[in-house]
Image 1 (spheres, rainbow, N blue to C red):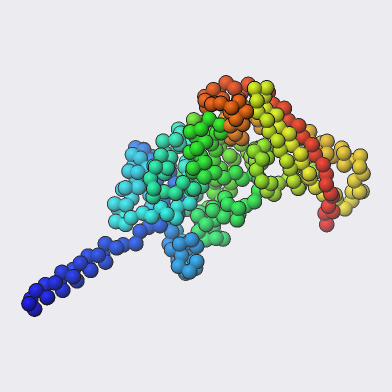
Image 2: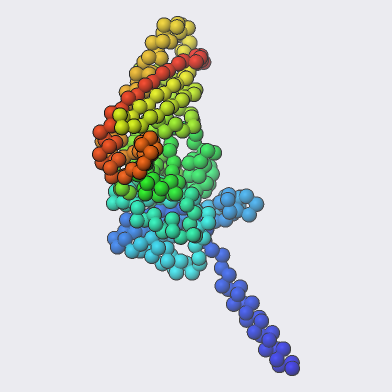
Length: 364
C-alpha cells in the first residue's frame, strides 16, 4: 500500500514538473514587417518586453528605463507562413499576435503586388483584421529598429500617430487591413497605404506620400498636399489643415462637400469657411480685399482638386470611391475593370468652390 502511494506521488510530481516546463510564456508580437527575400520573403517581428509596452504591461506600463522595450526576430521563408513557422521553431516559444497593431511592407513587394500576401492575415484567426497597413522604401526592419523617445515603444508611437489620439491632420490618411482587403476586392474604391520612413539619426519617423494601388500593385503616389485634398473630396471629418495662396496662409474652419457621379461625369461642390491672419503692418482688410482673397483661394482650390482627379484618372485608381457612387446612381452592378479602365479615366470633371472668410486674426 505504501509503495503504491509512493508511486502515485512520484507520477504526480513528474506531471507537475512536465506541465511547468511546457508552460513557457508566448512572445508578444506588436508589429510585423515583410521584405522580399531571395527565396520568398523575409519576415521581421517586433517582440515587446511586457514591462515596457503599455497595452500589455502589468499595471499599465513602466519598468526599467535602461531596458529596451522591443527586440526583433527575423526569418526567411518561401511564404509568410513558412517564415513564421521557422521563427516559432527556432525560438521554442509560441508567437502571440493578439497585440499586433502594425503590418509593414517594403515598396519592393508593393510593386510586385500585395494581394497574395494579405491572405494569411485575413484567413487566420490568430491575426486581427484592424491592423494598420504601411509601406516603406527599402527594408521594413529599419523602421522596426527605430526607438522613439515618447512613447518608448515603436508600436505605441505608430498607433498614437495613426489614430485619433495622435497626429490630427488631413495630410495623413491611414488604412486598416480589412479596409485595404475590401477595396482590393470591390470595384467601387482603390486601396492605398501611407508611406513611412526613418529620418537621419534613426530615432525619428516621418509619414511621407500616399501609395496608390491598382489590382494589388503599387502604381503611383500622392504627396501630402494631394492627400489633404483627397480627404476633402471624400468628405472626411475636418482635421487641422491650411491652404497657402500667394504666400498667405489660410486656416480651414469648416467645410461641406457634395459629390455627384453619373454618366454625365463627376460633379464636386465645396463650401469652405476659412480664417486669414493679418500681419501687424497690414491695415484692416476691406470688404473688397476680402472678396479678392476669397476668389484667389477658390481658384487655387479648384485648380488643385481638378488636377488631383486628373492624376487619379491617368493612374486608373479611385481611392476617393467615385465608382461606388456611380454604381449606386445607376442602381446596378459595376465591374472593377470596366470602371477603372474605361469609364473613370474618360469622365469629365466639374468642380465648384465657394469660399467665405469668416473672421480675421492678428499675428503677434
